[in-house]
Image 1 (cartoon, helix red, strand yellow):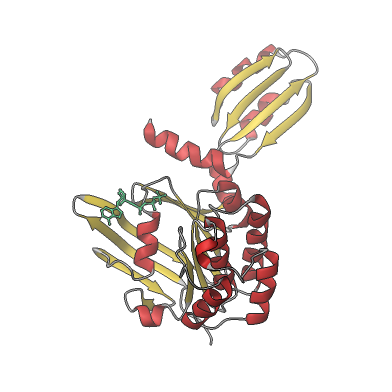
Image 2 (cartoon, helix red, strand yellow; image 1 turned 60 degrees about the vertical axis):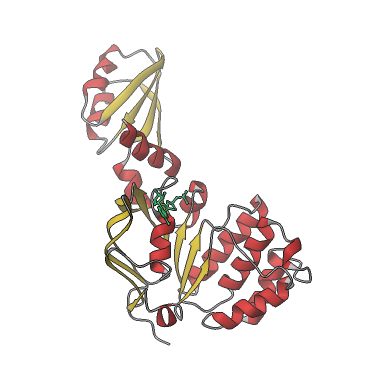
Length: 301
Ligand SMILES: Nc1ncnc2c1ncn2[C@@H]1O[C@H](COP(=O)(O)OP(=O)(O)OP(=O)(O)O)[C@@H](O)[C@H]1O
């Protein structure tokens, strides 16, 4: 089936629980084929947004749509999606295989060959009863079921919290394969390295509001880089680095080495360095973790 409408469309979405505004005026469109990372600290409103998207909650304001179908029309909306919750509950007396069969009957169709391959890759013993599974194994069942569907949209709510590093690597491969097939992924996660590795764009949520939506490269450009300059000879004239536009945190670690944080174009710093005898110039882009902490550090300040 051709899926032309936008996979995830949130328009001025809001949800209050009594006096608590869990989500406020959230507008966002996730286009087809994107792996979108949805980030925020505990209580920021990520799960509430996902529950609105799944039609498990009714919005107080605005609307949520899945491929053009209202999220509240669950029968239609869920034809387009597969979902992995943060804590997976399975039917305790069914085996893993029986759970997979049951889950395959709910979604928009399953590629059983690929599912068998995923069972192997996630080293899942599907002959055991679900009650004997650890948290991570229950998560694997839900992930295998979701990745094996042909659902054009995968909604994953902190799906790797119970996985070990090997399985986490497998998860990343599955995401890459899903993106190759053209599936869209909406991934909420606390694992910033994971988001950094797999997502094309991220949205950052703070106290129920979306404070940033940007590609990773764009986020890095907006945030500060760490610059280290090593000199062959002392250059007292570089004392003026501290006063240049976009420059902060200038530190002389030795008389021949200076580090600084730079936001925006590097021209003024490069011009200032022009007269010095520079041996080496290192520019390190911030990690997503640093960007993230920067947002919330500033919020707390
Ligand atoms: N059913 C509810 N009744 C009342 N308040 C709620 C309810 N569900 C969520 N909240 C409140 O809404 C806010 C957002 O919660 P939400 O669970 O969406 O955050 P989150 O970003 O998913 O957090 P976490 O990372 O801890 O899962 C919090 O202040 C939470 O206490």
